[in-house]
Length: 267
Image (cartoon, rainbow, N blue to C red):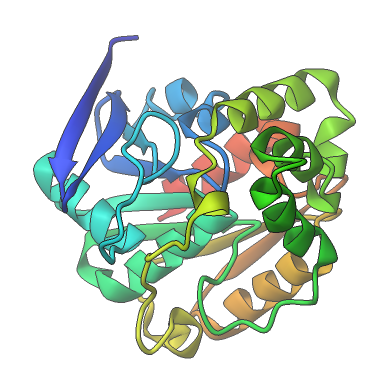
C-alpha cells in the first residue's frame, strides 16, 4: 500500500506525518512517550477503507521538540489538517492522545466527524488519583545519578503497562518507542496549554458520534474517565474490552479493529 510521508511546518513547529488510503479522513493520535508506531496494527488496516493520517505529536517521534513558547496539541492538529487540506475527520486517540482528540472535538466540532477516545485522559480539570510512580518518573529523569534512561526503564514498569508487557512482542514494541522518545517533557517545563474552560466542563457540547473504549484491566483513573465521558457526551457509547489493559489497540488489535470499523460503518 502506498504511504505518503512528510513534515509539515505548521503552528511554529515541524510535525512528522504519514498518510495512506482513500476515503473519509481518519486521524490516529498516540499517547505520552510514544509515537506513530503505536498504530502499526491499525494504520494499513483502516487505510483499506479510509484516508488515514497518523502523526507524531510535538516533542515525540520525528516531530520537533517544543520551545519555551506556549502551544496547544489540538491547535497543532487543526493546523496540520488545514495544511493537508482535510476539512473534517474521524478522530481516534489513546491515553493522552484521547485527551487531545476530546479537546479537539470541543474546540473544532465542525471538523470532528466521529470521536473514539481509547483509555483516554482528560487533559485538564480531572482530579487524578495520587500516583507516586508518576512523581518518581520526573525525579529520576532529572537526577544526575539516574537520568533519562533510568526514568524510561522505570516508566515501562508503570501499572498501566503491565497487561501489555505480558505479551513479549508488545513489550518489545513499547520499549522501542519509549527508548526513541526525546524525553523533553520529563526534563523541561512543558508550556502546552489546555482549553479554558477545560473539556471536562464542556463534554455536553460534543456533537460527534462517540465511542468510548477502555480496557477491563486499565487502572482506576482511566476507568473513571471512561465513565465520565459516556455519562457526559450526548449519545456516547462505551465498550469495555475484556482482558485488556491500557494499550488496548496493541494488546488485542483484531478485536479493537473490529470494534472501531463497525462503529464507523454505523456512523
